[in-house]
Image (cartoon, rainbow, N blue to C red):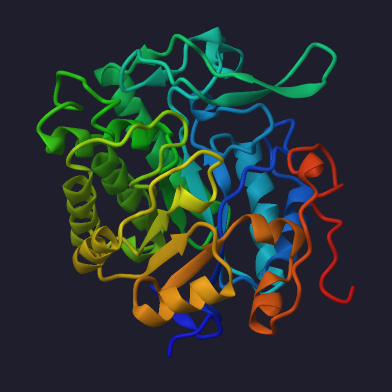
Length: 374
């Protein structure tokens, strides 16, 4: 029987357990630079088998919130280096999640006040951006109602930005990278047939057109980390096949789309595939990833698979023991339980999250949750 306590080798990275800290935006970087507070937060959670960082914008145009730390400027790379050093000093392992929000942004966050860019000019019916007002008070506002469609030059720039960010992540000391292709953000927007109805080689039909940008980004990222001495096994990809967050409709052929994506990732020797199941984490009803689709993905991608979404110990152990997943992602439980692996493995009670401080500024609700018995 495979258990959460079992170790796993991830392309030479020795994970002491199967518990993954899933990526979570926490809005603690008002100047877009990871600092000592963020380093403390991640170091507190270093007992995870693997930490996947919060989404890290790959460029100034990639961000959808005002208080997230990027990785496209030298000062940001230096800030993240402080985080990775703290995590490694605490015995942990951490990969950077490379993020582009696409249409889910606001002109106030874009260079020159431009409209955010997506596969088309169709807006998302839902989505919020975190902004600071003129008095420095932060809050959420609706994302733009008027995105612009990326042209060929813009697409080439996005690919280059992902590659540069991947190289920067290695320079910052990350143990690898995860490409964010889930949750309604740019890569997911290009994958979704109901959103990406472009009439050029980057969208619409055939399906290969919608896969073109995601796979071009994967290839560019693999090349970028290879130039820094890391193999493709340290590159991961996150997907949410049936996720409807941020106005991502389900569409005919979704199963074959993700089966093909999994096969293409496997052919490139991508190190891990991270599937986010939103069915237990969304307020409105959302379809779970069907068991037969998980089986198809597993067939095409035999490498390490992370499954995230509404997990507790029983569900996690069942997924591991059945072979559906190799690693289990936990997001929200890590907020209030920095020692979550111990609590899971020893059946200790979990602390509750204080919702009003999830997106607050400063240390409250961020680094002040104690370990069990602390």
